[in-house]
Length: 101
Image 1: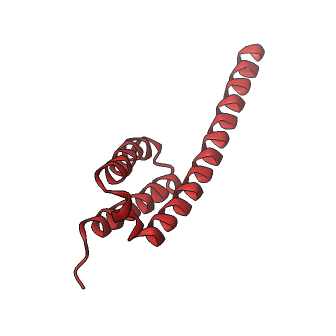
Image 2: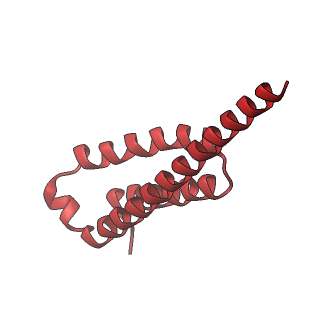
Image 3: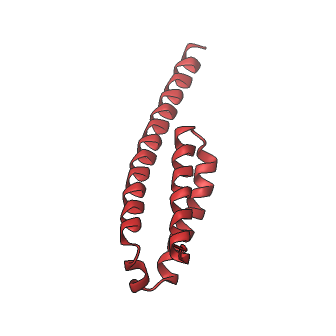
């Protein structure tokens, strides 16, 4: 069976989502941010360039993508929180060091 254009687009989006997850896991935040923009643009293109009827033919893949995106957003939020906490801790430590000088 030949894959349709929308199925190919969804496959590409799933690969990008996996890549974003890898960037987070490896703490490659600059790459994550760059690819996040590409990912977002491709999702917008998929949704605007396909009719609801076409999208309904790949509903299961869209649900999988939606679940994966939610997981990615949660992971991203956790990493952001951890980085913010590390930054605050470093600022506090820097202030303590200055106070001892």
